[in-house]
Image (cartoon, helix red, strand yellow):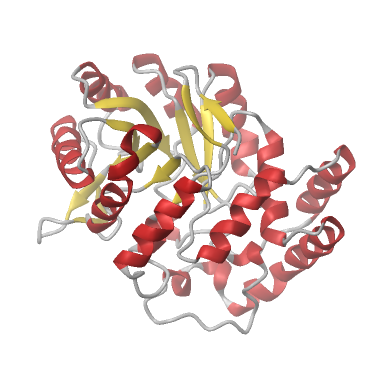
Length: 331
């Protein structure tokens, strides 16, 4: 698989990475540990070098899984993890509050290093902006960790344009991490211009709309009780029915290319900018192969114009997060 340089810091990753969150949470029951390790190692064999985790995934167990799976090839891959959520009463990270106090960042990094079984974190993201901590203090803490040799690159997830600019002035950012850019236009309008200006890479996560753009989900799909899509407005039956028109359109283009809707969506993202690398997640070997195959699909200029036109004409129904979680983005 081709590789891409993301950011001015020279971070080189495979054009398509692997998001590992769903192996431990969010999409029904966690995957079997042995099977998930085998899946991650198969991804490496197929040329994937970019793997994404976070302390809150599981929590903790996803970092342990990724670290164990990649230990034999540690020098061949890039591992990204994240800090930024506070601790619940049981001492585990939870979604109830954000925390980017410098002391907390350094504590979180020590835990991540241990769970991943590594001496240095390739890419460290702030998972969500903490409105109670100046971003200059956050960037300064990461700068110190880089100077100490514990972190190589700094990134931010779901941050607003001006916060990105302020952080970058203290410690240059390598990457920005944003959800569902295929049909969520705000990154294109607000964030991509500043990334291009400052030389920062872009990593779309959930690039397939939490599975919706695969074409395997429709208005009648039933999710298990522990699948977090049950609480996402975009996944109500009514929203899925309304948004099906875009998947149907993608399927038509995909059939003309001998591809799948998911592959067209990923190929379209790859064609946007050379400093963009999506990280679709999966627990299934067939989906992994499908996603990797998107890197070989060439879209013509007419294809790209048609996709852009289709996206611009569709009014997507339902928010991508529940309101309380959406309020933590673009700060």
